[in-house]
Amino acid sequence: MVRIDFLVFGYRRITLAKGEISRAASILLQKGITLLVFDEETLLIKERNVEICERLLSTIPSLKISEPLGLYGAFSRFQYKRGLISGLLCSLILVILAALPVWDVRVRGNDKIPESAVEQMLHECGFGVGSLWFNTDLSEVEAKLLSMSDGISWVNVNRRGSVAYVEIIEMQPEDTEEPKAPIEYSNIVAEYDCVIEAITVKRGRCEVKVGDTVRRGEVLISGVLPPEAGGGLCRAEGTVVGRINSTLSEDVDRYGLQTVEKRRKLTDITLNFFKFNLNIFKTYGNDTEKCDIIKEIDGFSLLGKCKLPFEIEKKYSAERTEKPREYTDAELVAVASGRLEARLAVMLSDCDLLSRKTYGRFTERGYRMSSDVVYLTEVGTETEIEIIP
Image 1: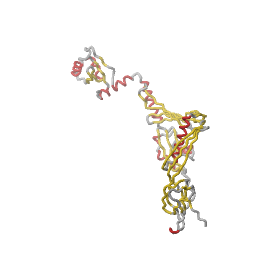
Image 2: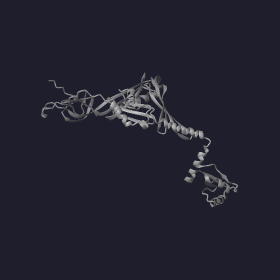
Image 3: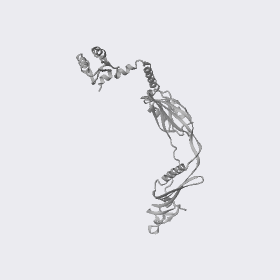
Image 4: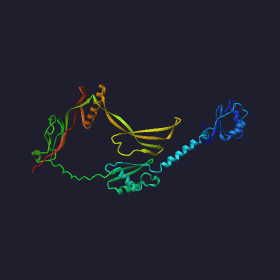
């Protein structure tokens, strides 16, 4: 184990033949030199004691002294590479200085208000590309922007590296529609063709019983009260659960279209250094609409071992196009199965599945997969009783 003072101020490794370690250690300790016994053949001494140790141990023929080690040794090995170190330091200073101003402003959340209009208002607030971060109060910019625009209800300005991200929420138009009058009298009717499995009546008169087969639109719970209940009209309330038999089918053509990448266009280059982000290149406009955004990050390392603390992030807009393709039998079955499963998941999201039978067959155009399902769900829906004066 090497002591911390040896590591910081530098040390040397002295290698001797076996049996000579005790002799060498005795000579050095008599002169008051601090040392560490590393193993049976090695001593460690501080860098400042190298010359006196060489003189004292010169009579030992097996004496070998290593190159400078520790932090001092690392710096001394770079003494002929001062240009590289100076270049790295200058690059670091330039990156830090480059991160002081605002290099880009990106607006998000705007739908009706153009991005150029938001940037113009920010410019009038004294904030934009070229503004210095340390001389800008972002909360003051937010307050000024809100006071300048009647179409913005909320704004937030954040800094990410050298880029300013402006998040806004636009004013929603007031609802001018008059509220609908509440329903006074209604029936509960069947929304699907089904077999009644359960009925719960809270108000109104039950028109069906468990086991009945009903058609869509048939009255299940009536809002017309019977004479023994006082007669008259009411708003029917209750729950009706029905058993539904349904068949879903999905057809897939053997010859279809495949979406592929047509071309890729570079839209953004950003240099990331620690937590600083320096935008080097960016295209503006709406040319990235209806395109996939692809991000690539290139890192750097020293001699393939030590990862350097900066990377280049590139963004591309990939334009897509469609080209003809032919599905194999296995692909037809897989595509049909995936589409059918997605439709069933949506349809049965709030239902209780009782049974399911899935089957398929190849057709002249491709493949058809079907599922016969039986499930339970609420089948009643409210319809208003119109009173004709």
